[in-house]
Structures are given as C-alpha cells and as structure tokens.
Length: 71
Image 1 (cartoon, rainbow, N blue to C red):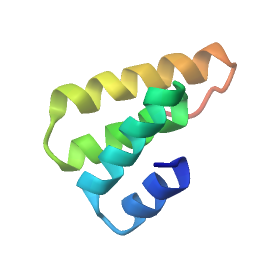
Image 2: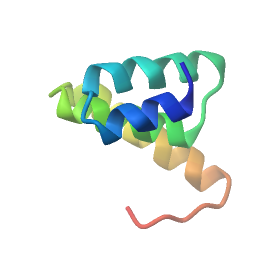
Image 3: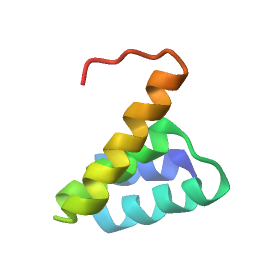
Image 4: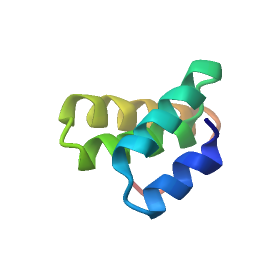
C-alpha cells in the first residue's frame, strides 16, 4: 500500500482500508504523515490505544524535523 492509497481511503471514510494502508507504509519506513493517518483511521475504528500511540509518534517525528504544526 501507499501513502496516497491511505489518504484516498481516509477521504472515503474507508477506515479499515486506510489503517491497512498506513500500517503497510510504516513497515517500509516511519513517517509522521503515515503515523498521523494511522491515528485518524484508528480513532474512527475506536482503537484508542493505537490512535493515541500513532499520534504521539507523528508529533515526535514532526518535531524532530522541525515541523511545528498546530496540534
């Protein structure tokens, strides 16, 4: 799966498909965008533990590269 596939699945509210796509992306390489997408999908799937852990990882990686998004 690709980041684009995950984003498209999020746009269609296909939460399980999005989660699968972002998990696949993260197997290849950790990125804040993939963790953020995983967090959103997991939130809608009511998997709070994964959602929070993924959002923490996204925040950490965004911060490490100097990206100060408004959270």
